[in-house]
Structure formats: structure tokens, C-alpha cells
Amino acid sequence: MTRKVALYYSVMALVLVAVGIFQSWNVALAILNLCLISAIMTLGVNMQWGYAGLFNVGIMGFTALGGLSAMLVSMPPIGEAWSVGGGGIAVSFAILAATVVAIVVARRMLLPILRLPATLALIVLGYFLIRGHFEAATDLIEAVDPAHTGYLGGLGLPIVLSWAVGGLVAAAAAWFIGKIALGLRADYLAIATLGISEIIIAVIKYEEWLTRGVKNVTGLPRPVPYEVELVATDWFIDFADRVGAADLAEAASIFVKLCYASLFVAVLVVVMWFAERALKSPWGRMMRAIRDNREAANAMGKDVTWRHLQVFILGSATCGIAGAMLTTLDGQLTPTSYIPLRYTFLIWVMVILGGSGNNWGAVLGGFVIWFVWIQAEPLGNWFMHTITLPLDEGTWLRDHLISGAAYTRLLLMGLILLCVMRFAPRGLIPER
View 1 (tube, rainbow, N blue to C red):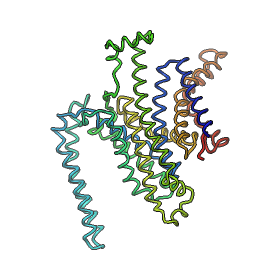
View 2 (view 1 turned 60 degrees about the vertical axis):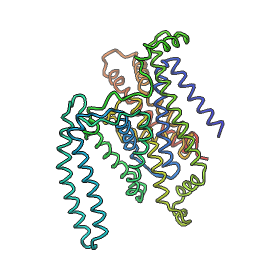
View 3 (view 1 turned 90 degrees about the vertical axis):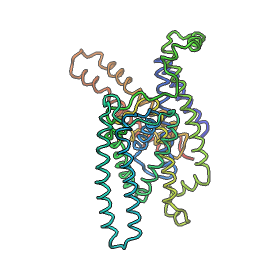
């Protein structure tokens, strides 16, 4: 097993080095950074599926919460928006909290026959009270320089803090969702998590007072230097001369990507260490026992639902961390980029290819699939142009094949999944 892990990881490293040599180091490092984030996300899904057998299809929802946290933590607050609408938003949330408390108290104190009417009456009353304050406040906030702001902004803190905050926010959402959905059967759990993920993404996409919606929030602060600042500093110019860099701008871009890679590797190492410790602990053996035979574990006195909630929270928190890291790397919050079905499918292919239940396999799957996803389109274009060279330009067949090259990545994903299911159903590095 150890030799197989070393072999696969060595091959993956050589492939990335080959991209750096034959394409460019900028491209190779860009792929590496995205592979590192994908690996962290696959570790989160592997905790849920590989450890406990939970089929979570709401991965993008937790990733989006991480991205939202990166924006809310790092962007500076918009003073004018807070002055015109911040009070109304605060009153709305206060009424929401009061409504929830009133419903809980009423259901505990009233007779059973009165509980349902009282609950419905409080919900209706709370809705109209919240709506009266909330809509007026959001209209005022979105009217503040909508071309550049139109939202409340954030806290103006270092963006690296948002990685931990993103994990906490995703964990809190997972606790709330898990309390509702984890009692469902596997297929219903998948439907529930997918639906909740769509709701989360819809809120992020359309609540402009919070996220600017489809107008995006750009210019998020970086945890690493900016290229334009590096090329103007003496120490970096001297450093570039010493290493023999011909293009100062390209050297700055490579340096920035290396800084990101260092941060991402550090996070991956920490998450991997905790994941391995958890998997090999008595808790991890118990989770796998529950996964393999839920009824037997329940008969032995194990609280299956509580254990499922634990691992659901841990896996979702890991996806939230990865989501915050991805938004940090992009430098912007783009709600329309969270496409649940497409990227959820990708993450699941990563876990299946690498080997569910094995953390080293999950990380390898994240690297392999993301590398193929990025490189498939340029390779598809090259392949289609090569095989259509004998055809005259403008012929329908040549144009059709070249225009279809963009779908090569989808074809490859399907082929990879079929080949894995046929020849390595337990993944490249299967669970022991």
C-alpha cells in the first residue's frame, strides 16, 4: 500500500512538472493550487461518505457558505449602507429571533389543541413584521452606489481568518440541516441536501444587500503580495536577477502562486493529519462499523444519528474551509459560479477514483480529476485540430468536430468513471 501511494503521488508530481516544462510554470502552479483546494474538499466528502456512508449532494452549498464568509470577513464595511439600512436589518433579525422564541414558548405552555393555531398565528405575524422592516432596509442599502457597492460590506479583517470562519459557518449550517435530514434514508438524504444546497446558493445569488448578487464582489484582499507591488520592490528585483528570471512580471506571478501554494499545502497537511488521526482512532473504527452495518451498531448501543451528525458537521466544515480558500484565490465572490450538479459530480468522481474511505486516495483523486478537468479542453482542441487537418477549412464536419472539443472534459469524466467502476471499483488507493 505504501509503495502504491508513493508511486501514484510521484507520477502526479512528474505530470505537474511536465506541464511546467512544456507549457509554463504559471499554468502548472495554477493547476496545483486548484488541485490542493480540491483535495481538501474531497477530504470533507470522504469523511461523510468514506467514514460513515452519508450521501451528501449539497457540497456546493457548504462551499458557497465558505466563499460568502471570505467576503464578509475581508471586505471593508460600507458606512453609508449601514447608516441607511443597517438598523432595519438588525430590527428584522431581532423580530425573527423573537418569533422563534415565542413559538418555542407557546408550544411548551399551551394545551396540545392550541399549539398548531398559535404557531401558525405567530409565523404569520412575524412574517409581516419582518417584511415591513426588511424590504425597506434592503431597498435603501441596494440604492447606495449600486454600480460599485449596493451592499453592507464586511468586517475588514485579514482574509486568512475567513478560512476558519468559513468552516464554522458551514459547520453551523450542517448542524441545522443534519438535525432535520439525517433521519432520512440515503436516497431521501441526497434529495434533501441537494435542495438545501440550491436554497443556500439562491440566497447568495439574489440577496444583493448581502452579496451584491449577480453583480459579484470583486477586489477581495489577498493574503499574499500583489504582482504590481513586487515588480516595484528592490528585494524582489534582486531576487529575480539572482535566479535568472528573464521576465520580471512572469517571475512575480510565479512567486505569488508559490505563496498561495505554501498556504494551501499548510492547510491540507493540517486537515490531513486530523483526518488520519480520526480515521485510525476508536471513533473512526466505530464510524466504519456504523457504515457497514447500521442495525448491528444500533443494537450494540451506539447512537447512530448522533454519530452521523458529528461526521456530517466535520465534512461540511472542511468543505466550507475549501470554499473560503477558493474565493480567496479567485479574489472575488461570484455566486453564479456555484453550480451544484456539475461540481458536486466532479467532487464525487474525485472520491470514487481515489478510493472512498482512504484519505490518501481522496487527495490523489482530487489532484487527478482536477488536472484532467483543466487540461481536457486544450488537449481536446489539439486533438480535433490534428485529426481534421486533411479536411478543407469551412467543411461542416471539421467545424462540427472543432466546436465540440469543449465537451471533451465531460466525455473524459464519464469514461474515467466507467473505467474505475469496471477495473478498480474500490478506487486507485482503496480502503484497507
